[in-house]
Image (cartoon, rainbow, N blue to C red; front, side):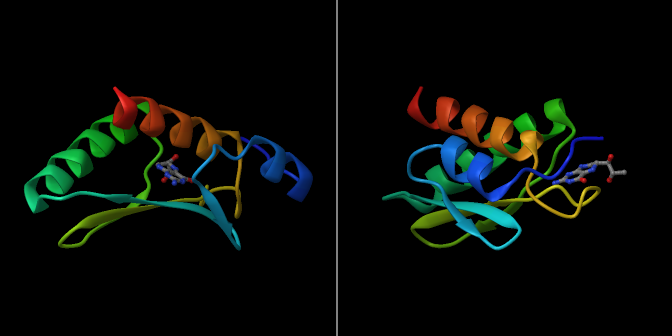
Length: 93
Ligand SMILES: C[C@H](O)[C@H](O)[C@H]1CNC2=NC(N)=NC(=O)C2=N1
């Protein structure tokens, strides 16, 4: 199981546009069309299944919020940072 990272490790490695919120990392993606947000959430879910690491996904009218933490470890781990990078890559694709 992945270990919880230190505050410095997290701040050093958090992808740009992501924020730390306690034991979670969070990013809000804005969309000009509700169904684009829904489709993005689907894509995030597929990444989550492939990594077996699951974010909290909140779909709103014009944005999708992604929150990541490692429940098994009780904090932010390598798995969360990796997921954030993968989601960023897909979003930018
Ligand atoms: C049993 C445990 O739920 C699984 O090992 C996986 C599933 N997906 C998960 N997702 C997240 N975010 N944290 C976990 O600790 C986690 N654990």
